[in-house]
Amino acid sequence: MRKSEITILGIILISFIIGIYFYAQMPSMMASHWNARGQVDGYMSKFWGVFLMPLTLIGLLILFILIPRIDPLKENIRKFRKYFDVFIVLITIFLFYVYCLTLLWNMGKRFDMGILMMPALGIIFYYAGILMENAKRNWFIGIRTPWTLSSENVWNKTHKVGSKLFKIAGIITFIGILFPQYAIFFVLISAISASIYTIVYSYLEYRKEIR
View (cartoon, rainbow, N blue to C red):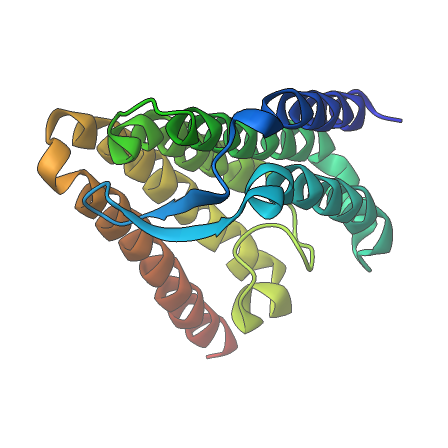
């Protein structure tokens, strides 16, 4: 197994151990979702509240293992595999972080869930930008539009632009910490804007190319 896969497996094992240890302390119905104001607006039974995330992490590990092996362009994935490995570890740590916050909340600790999510999301967005600037054309990882997948040149141009935009989105997300009431908008507007722009950009670049 790769180091990244061993790391993720270790995090999964720790999450199960934590879940089993604190299971008895959880309420019968656990808070599982928070709205933009940081208020709980979703609940689930204790069993799923404790073990859904660890089980989800197992599914993600399987997916992360399969993607580089089943992609028709897997040779390209090998060229930026080290960046992909770091990204999947970061995603796993992020979900484990959310899991720990959820357990703490259900144990009676109170905090602003939205604000605590901001730095983690900022890191994910910024590193997504790093991944994009190194990603080679493939079917699973990156900005996969019909136009980037149809042209190596459009793929490269789009990911160069997308890399900058997602790094900026990460920085904007961090800035959102200073404005708690509007933090969620810093996340949504920056991420959605970056996504829409790169999709439109890839289409326009493809149109230029076929002309």
